[in-house]
Image 1 (cartoon, rainbow, N blue to C red):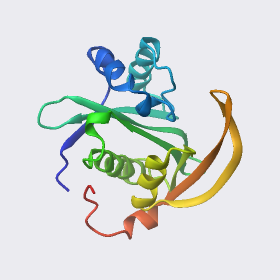
Image 2: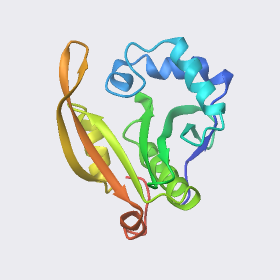
Image 3: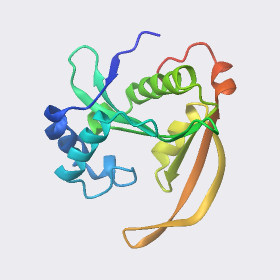
Image 4: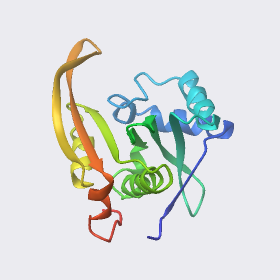
Length: 180
């Protein structure tokens, strides 16, 4: 697959770009970035990306042509005993709907299944984040369940929609793991 993106580590020069992309409430409100987004949170993302942590990997997503930061992707709670990890992904509003998130997801799944030798990747989406729910469904993830009223978030109880994808499901998915 010819990616239009590159995935690498965040660095200090990304802090202002992270803040700019995450200042849009629609980007960070329901994501693990958290709302409101702060410069301290951006510094933590950069620091976490630099750490060689076997339990948590954080990556920057950039346009291949320009190197411009467009978002991030992470694998956390990496469990080598049970061969699974949680995935999280975000892209700035100007880059949404262009297939970049799907390319980043494919990169991360290849990394998780081929390099880390994991069996399962799972995601938790706060309802009503329908864009993310639709993204994971369209990407071949299975909806495993709903944790009702699981989190108290900005003065309201939200459900968590659980998704997973097994290595063999991903391997047997259509060969064109191209962006949508």
